[in-house]
Length: 152
Image (tube, rainbow, N blue to C red; front, side, top):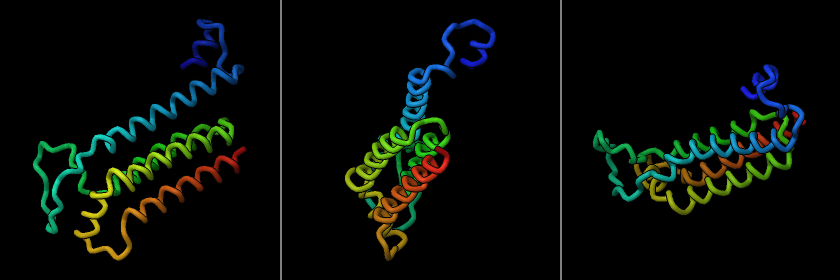
C-alpha cells in the first residue's frame, strides 16, 4: 500500500529506500501478528478441574483450553511471521525469535502446565506433552533461523 502511494507520488518518503522505516514497519508487523497469535493463549482459562473422561465444556465457555497443542500451533504462526520477511537481518530475526520462544516456553512450563498434565492423564501418554511442546518450539526456532540464514 505504501509502495503504491509512493508511485502515485502521494507521499514523499519511499519505504524501499529507507532501511530504518522498513525495519520499523517490519518489526511492528511481526509483533502485531505475534500478539494476535498469543492473545488466546494468555487468556486461556486453566483453573478447570481435570476429568479423566472426555467431557466437553459448556458451549459458552470459549476460554477453556482442553488441548495443549494450540499453544505450539500459535507459536508456529508467530514464527511464520518472522520467516515471511526475507530482507530482515538475521540478528534481528534471532532476537525476535528468541524472545518469542522464551515467552512460549515460560507459558508452557509455568502458567499452563496444568493443561499439559491434564492432557497427559486423559491420553495416558508415555512422554510428557509439555516436554514435547518445548522440543517442538525449539525445533521450529531452529528451522526458522536456518531458513533466514539460508536466504541471507
